[in-house]
Length: 246
Length: 246
DNA sequence: CCAAAAGTGTTCTCAGTACACCCATGT
DNA sequence: ACATGGGTGTACTGAGAACACTTTTGG
Image 1: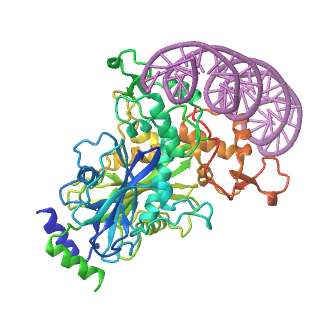
Image 2: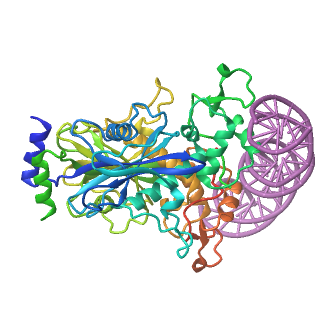
Image 3: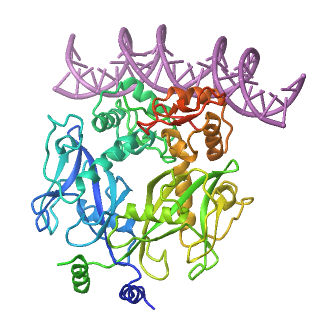
């Protein structure tokens, strides 16, 4: 009485329809002071030559979370990429993939500065895109950047992902996932400014971070170097009080 | 070239495994001053006689969101239940359903006081459970309420759902989804106290709600009755500044 | 008439902000 | 030496907490 035979029996009996389940990853990183996201150019149909979020099918014997972690490792080429991965939202409209019924579980990853990615087997190219160049902000409908063509519903996924990243900085310590240890408060400050695209008073920022228990911990190993080095705080990831967006 | 034949062709070719996709609903309501959630008692195997979140399979031609809305309507017996429904998280560990590989997209619903539910076809019973009686809080491991046996990974889903409901009250106007229009500020106040299980100063609460643009709007139709009646504000659902948990 | 809830005022405190100002380090 | 970020001090402001108080309604 295996899982597969059960499934096929039930499917033939018409109890429920079969779905393909995929994971899609919005991997964010700070590069040259700008928030960027990793996209791959599709080599095959459909949406050939359009840009898409990296992702792939969930295998029969792995959890959806594990599939996301596996795809992330494959895409970055690193066993431990040193950042943070979390589930974003599931997209399951019929017709979002013209070939078949696919339900996609989207994830966001916060990554420190990573090496330039290598295109996968079914990708023509892979590169980091500045989020400002993707035309996601629907502020001024006339003068916006159009951005590249995006495959499937990935523009919508990216919009949700971007909002998640921006809001997560407010009430969590996940900004530290964007920097490599040890880091300075100046680097952390630059992360906030890049993600929010706004100026933040450095003095007040320093005080607020240092006053948040468990956000950062001084790196004693570095000694008394003048830009003091810090590491990620160990305990809670929830920030209270939160750091407010200007 | 239909979706189904494509799927079967690809499946036979071994490109990707088939999944069943379900939705599970955590429908919250305030009853007698306590936060409650709707659970159904399972009539069949597996987890017979255990309590489970209402839910069901996503159909071939409907979106996942639509499936959740359909299940919600079926479960409450109302075409428009007058509350709020949103996606929570997707649970996709292998083995979470012993029969087959199921990926479940969980939703939370905020409902005003609803009629007592009727058990569905495959349910032995259906009732509202006070969340305090479910033993979800892992505060005191010794003296906690054990609560009923919960099917599948629904205890974990409920934990996440409960945290979502509690935090959503802070930064959104969704508390209004728990009351029927028109409502008084006292009723809204009772919602916050029930969900957070804490005393909140009524005077400060009133000022804060009335100072939040778009939270509530005075119901002019009721005239100058003394407990003034309000309706949900039309515009934004995001609350800034937020109402802080004590 | 009295209790309970609705609604208003007042004070205190503290976090957040703006901005001025020193200090260390590298070139 | 001096420019550049690192790091600190300080006064102002406003939101939130606590709590006293008045007003209305229902029994």
